[in-house]
Image (cartoon, rainbow, N blue to C red):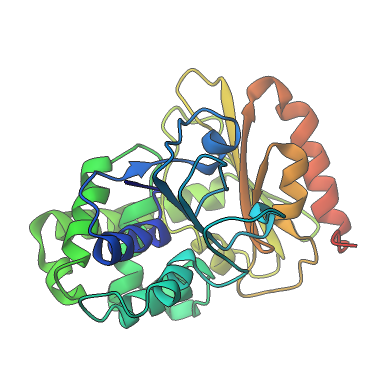
Length: 298
């Protein structure tokens, strides 16, 4: 039996809960949703998929993304919810050896972007949010760190986790990166009406930072589109899109829209990865949809 989940804070918490509830001893398989959708990941018949699209071969499936809904019987649980971790927590509520309610509450809050301006600007004052940024802040895989966090969060409270020397080092690095990231956002973001477009394709190693900072820097925009290359060979492009959490006037279901461009996600946020040769076709179409700002769920 193996846990298959994505490397973000919600995925980390999903793994913590599943390890406790099911006494799994195999290591987590960390997967990007786009790779699973495209059949690039082998799923075994006893795998438990969490916070990712469904696969027919899995034993159990838990998810909450709008675009991952299915119309077939399955074992597990799906519903539109703040986090996949919250769904697992409810499903196995009588099976845990300790109380994870604070951890799951944090996963709900962070994955649904239910954040204040002060949390975004001063993450060092908010323990769980600070920790979450060390998980998915960059784009280089760091499986050893992700696995370590799963182990720590399964044993200790948040204060003890943050005192771990490796975690502390990651947190301090994030705070430095955020200062640099602000400058990059200001220099590489253009505006098309209410849409802010941040293009990091000119950089071999794109800067990373708090993904919510862009909304605090450009409060008049409704939605941000961030573009970068996935690899140094510049063969694939990654696009992340999110509704502003401080100016919630975007009417486009982002996840639903991105299913037309090889991606998916939630109503308010989503991502896609595609061959760089498609960028000149896909990106202008995506921007046009966001500029028109029409409800696309009908």
